[in-house]
Length: 196
Length: 176
Image 1 (cartoon, chains in turn brown, yellow):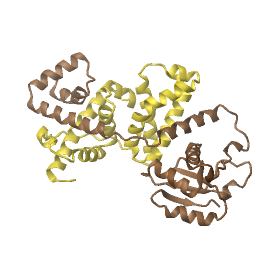
Image 2: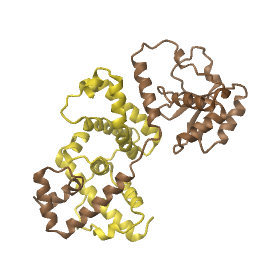
Image 3: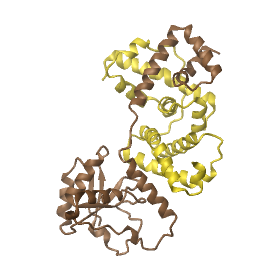
């Protein structure tokens, strides 16, 4: 095997996926070359660093909930007016933890964009009492949950393909004031808008 | 498990998600560097698994099949955003690979490795990430990206050289 071919196989020697014959050839070459041994050591460290820093999905469970909701919807006929999307109304007094669980369970849905709703609510005016938001890309799930609880908001749709969510306030009065309060939490919310 | 999923077994699908979500998300996120976009694309990958499980023929492993779906979706995103580059031939150069000693001694090694991987061309980067993050063989990488094994070896060869050279250069220049 040519030296270049041996070099090309070094990463696979390091990750242990060569077949027996290839492994033996590469090992023999390594034993005869200090440069190859150094490459192997360096590659092993790079692999170790890469595996130690594999990104994790903070919202893995929410992703599963969204997925299961999608396949459930797929198996059901689509109604003209999607009443299943009507927001839950939960009193904050009932319990913050319950509200958070329900809110987070609604991290689901098919795409929507703030400027172009893709479906019509049964009541026809639900958009009027919602906020469209996008969370900061690096915000933690617990920070989102805390903010929603504090502000009395539940997620009723999203994320869209562009990462937008629609939030419904438990108290629908003073939506403008609420939007300002939400905007002030800039560590959590990247974008806040009242749909027209 | 795929056979069960093809028969609309939701429990099997949930188990499959739990087994594959982490490596797939890591693979996608590293390409897109956007958690929202990565989550959306991950969702699309699993939906395709749900819809396409019946078409899985077993010619490759399930893992490479699913990574192949993810890879093609990432390429679609790249195309839409104009990120796809045609892989230019890497000119042959004298071997300036660093010694292991040069590469090893750094407390900021992870930062350097990360930065250097991000500098690789997409083709090189995918090959080396699949080899090192997922411990795929070159045959499996060939299945995932749909390129011949020889092409995979060439890309990994160049990626390895560029990576070692980049890490060495960063260490020597004191870049943090």
